[in-house]
Length: 111
Image 1: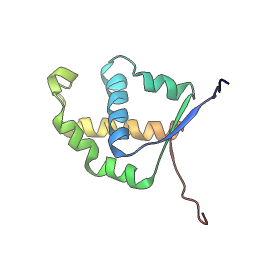
Image 2: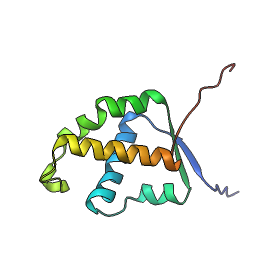
Image 3: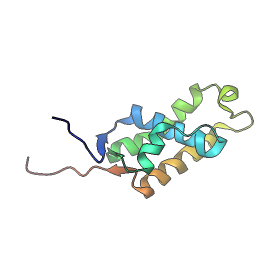
């Protein structure tokens, strides 16, 4: 028996989401190749879920921590300061949330 699904829903943690946001930021801000995951999100074949704690971690330091470790020259950020890189990434996260590509999981009471 073959099972076919119209879409996949995945819950992502901070480590996964920070890398997704960064790769999509590279595509939109620096014209890097479109990441496959963005195509899946745009075609609604993939929907990512996370919680407020992960979003707060991203904005509160996880994005900055990742950005401080990347090779700025290799990735194309030559003349861009870390604060601006971080703002681009936060803007990208807001875009993903507004489009519904990343959704907040609401905990259910009464398991």
